[in-house]
Image (cartoon, rainbow, N blue to C red):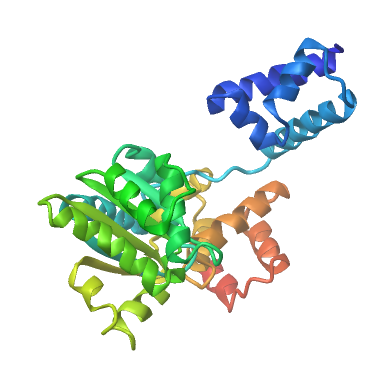
Length: 314
C-alpha cells in the first residue's frame, strides 16, 4: 500500500470513529465498508485505484470546504429562541403547536438544535413533496424510531404509538406540505396519549401554508386540530434583530456599516439565510468589508433598494 493510500484509509477510519461505524462512513462516502476492509488487507480483487480515487476525491473536497466560510450551526437568535421554547412548551403540555413564518429566518436550525439537545424526548422529520402522504409520514417516523418499514399502515401507526412515550414531542419541518390525512394521523398520536392522561406534543413548523390550511377556508375540516393547538406562533423577517446578525457573524463585531447592511438585508425576503450567505460568499472571495458586501450583493442579484446609501449615511 502506498503512503497516499494508507493516508486515505486513515482518514476513513477517523471519519468512521466520528460517525460511530465504518458502515456509516462508507455510506456517506459512497463506498461499502466491506470494500474498505479488503483494501486495508490488500486482497480487493476489483479496480483498487478506482476505489481509492473515491476516497481521495471525497477527502480532498472536504479539505477544500474546510477552507471556506463556515456558518455558525446555531445561535440563540430572537426567532430561533421562539421556536425552541415553543417546542419545549408543547412537549410539556401536549397537543399541537404551529410555528409559521417567512423562509430563511432560523426555524429549521432551531428544530435541529432542539432535537440534538433532546435526543430521547423528541423526534424530528422533514417533509418534502414525495413524503407528504399518511403512509410516508408514518414511514419517516418509523425510520427515526428504528422500527421496520415493511408494515401495513395501521401496523405502522400502532408500532409508532408503542415506541413513543409520555413527555415527548414530534416536530415536523416543512409541514405546509402535509395532507389532511397525515395531519389527522399526527393528531391521533397526540390524542392517544391524552386519553391515557399523558402528553405527546406535535409541532408543525413551516411557512404560512400551514395556517392557511388550518385557519383558512378549510378550517372546518381541521377543527379538531385547531382545538388542540396551544400555541400559534407567526414569525416574520421584520422580527429579526440587529443583535441576531452579530451573534450569527461574530467576526463583524464592531463593524457597524457591515452589520447594518446585513441586518437590513435580513429583514427583506432574503431573510437571515440570505444575509449569512451573502457574507459567506464575500468572505470566500476575500473581501467582506462594506464595499465587498455590496459588490457581492449585486453579483447575487440582491435588490438593495437604496439600502446602500441609507446605511452609508449612518
